Image (cartoon, rainbow, N blue to C red; front, side):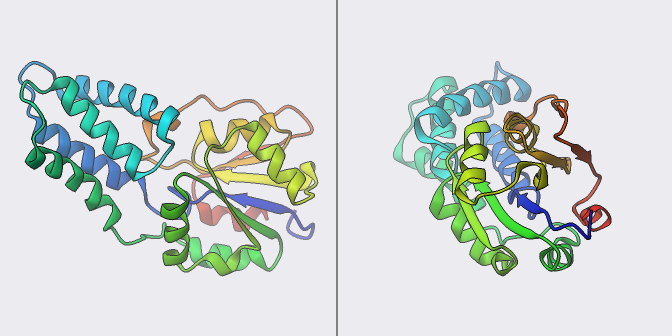
Length: 232
């Protein structure tokens, strides 16, 4: 495949750099701070997951939506009212995420350098535009990509739109990412190929069984981003 130029649509969070580990730390700190007497940490996490799903519908992805989820979960579970001081503490958990440097995953930079000489690379990430564009700039990898697409949601229609907008050929286009729900399954549903690169800390709301690739679409499952150099 390396001698045949392909289009590689590449996810960002938890594919190119660490992301969810910072949210997990913030959630652990929040649950510890809540210190609920009747609910276990696992039960609180399930409630938070449900609240996050609700907030995504109305506020999308990103830190503002995550902060709302923490505040709503606190209001739902705490016996005491949320005071300005408590509000500030909860917001602090989210701010700690924003202050994290962009930490690239192993061998990402050199793999992108290798791939860009052989294929067309397009970064496709979802979430809050300002947050995601900021991470793209700070990561130092923007120059590897011919285009950057920051979308509010990743579903089949999103991939169909990107395919049409950039006049891509479906059987030579691959979506590469760590999320079955957002990267792999909707890309396959849109008639594209896909490469699944698992991450141990993929967000629980992105978990989903991998769909089967219906020919002519193809699905590769790798163990690391660097393995892409063996296939492309």
